[in-house]
Amino acid sequence: MILPIYIYGQPVLRKVAEDISLDYPNLKELVENMFETMDKAEGVGLAGPQIGLPIRVVTISLEALSEEFPEFKDFRKAYINAHIIEFGEELVPMEEGCLSLPGIHESVKRSNKIHVKYLDKDLKEHDEWVEGYLARVMQHEFDHLDGKLFIDHISPLRKQMIKGKLNAMLKGKAHCSYKVKTVAKK
Figure 1 (cartoon, rainbow, N blue to C red):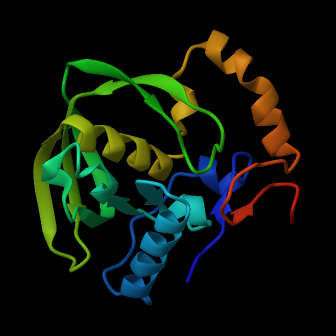
Figure 2 (cartoon, rainbow, N blue to C red; figure 1 turned 135 degrees about the horizontal axis):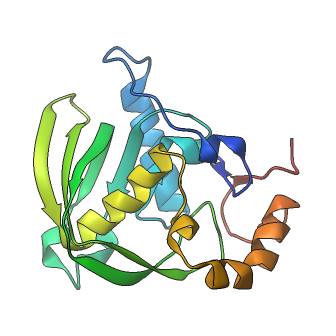
C-alpha cells in the first residue's frame, strides 16, 4: 500500500523516533509498504517519520544506481532501530534532496564513513562500518530518526535562499508527483 509522505512542517519530522519492540505489529507489511511508497515517489530512502510514524525504521534501495555502481545491484534493505555510533573524520560535500522537502536540493557535507548498529528485516543484529554513497544515504535517513532534516546542515545564507519554498510547504503547497500529507491539509 502506498502511504502519504509527510512534508516539511509536519511535527513528526522534528520528533526523535523511538526504537520498536521486536514484536512490533505488522512490521514486515510496514517495511513492504515503505518500499512501495519510496519506489512510487522515486526515492532512494524513506524513514518512519516521513510516513507519520515516530519509529526507528528506514528503507533504502539503491538499485536505480546499479548501472553506474554495480555494487548496488539488487540493494534493498530495511534498517530497524538504527543508530550511528561513530562518524569518520573525512567530510564530503554532495547535493541532497528529500521526499519530505520536494523541489529543494542543497550541498551537504557528511562523513564518508560511519559506524552503525541496526537490525535487518529478519531482526538480525548488525554492527558495521559503512562507507561512500551508502554512508551518506544512511546519515540522511537516520537524521530523520533524530528529528533532523538535511537543511539543518546548510548555511544560514542557503537557508534564507530557500525560505520561500519552505514557507510554501508550510502553507500546504508541495509540488510533487506522489501522495503527500502537508500541514495545511489536516
